[in-house]
Image (cartoon, rainbow over all chains, first blue to last red; front, side):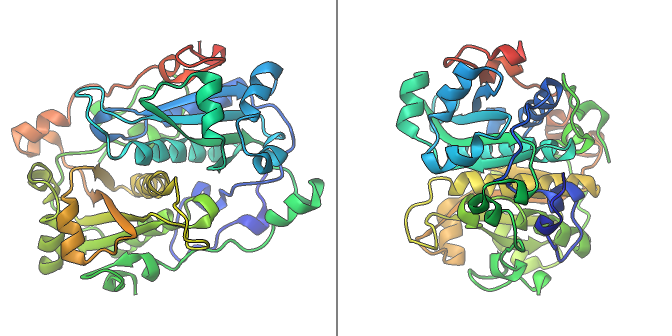
Length: 203
Length: 203
């Protein structure tokens, strides 16, 4: 489902999957087909990363496996459980803090987890799924529940599922799925010769 | 240019832009058309971010502006200058460490910079450009050269340009643009009921 109200209005042409992507709060509780899930994970797999470290690790729960589902769902903050319960897949995304080839800190491990997450998201969008990422997770719960080693950091959760029409959802959630999408203008975040001064190319 | 040797061999279907993307070391020194550059930046603009903070900031230099180009290029570690000099655009990517709505630390600011970077990368790939990201930057130089405020962190650099055939490049660089691309198998990074144990869905 494409939510017409949530389509971005870009000032320069971008791919439909970029324009139509949004992070829905209203999902319909449908399971995600396993071949679609595998395509999403595969997209994360081929993301770029510093020294090809691939620092991303995912704990996967699908809604058909009640035990795994509840275990993962309990690691979200409550406000996220309220809507994520209608997703089809939940991933708890963790990242390795050091390089495997020399054991030294990897300054961009969180950045690279984000790259993999975006690759997964755009693949999902291309095959009719929707992704909603969360920073609101219970880090200590994830560590304890899954015995995450010290060298890894739980960072985000990723809900994958099928967006529903806002009017089919809880009114409080529906409100968040309506309204024009907003972003800073390019001139507010692309600088030229010095910090805070817009690059001439974006004026 | 699609480098046939650098096309991924995914185990599950993914978008061509994900499969064909790689980080070239051999670029041809061609400028990037301004409308293409704007589409790349626009793709970054519409990425998801926690609380819609949009923590990404980019310092932009295009190769036609020699002063800006040299200034930005000097902020890369030397090994990266060697190949990035043949890109058309250089972005120094910085990220805001706190949320603007409450001033508190944003735990996922680096992650969200990565999301924007991946969106930019896949847009670039779709319009015939190539992106090569770098963690190898001189953080102190960037801070000093552009007077980056304390609340922001220089994290990566992004070269955008046109890949060239490896054989047209320096032999040392050409070597890095050849050979089969490698990734961990899904079962190595997607876990199920407990850490380090593959999810049944990826077996």
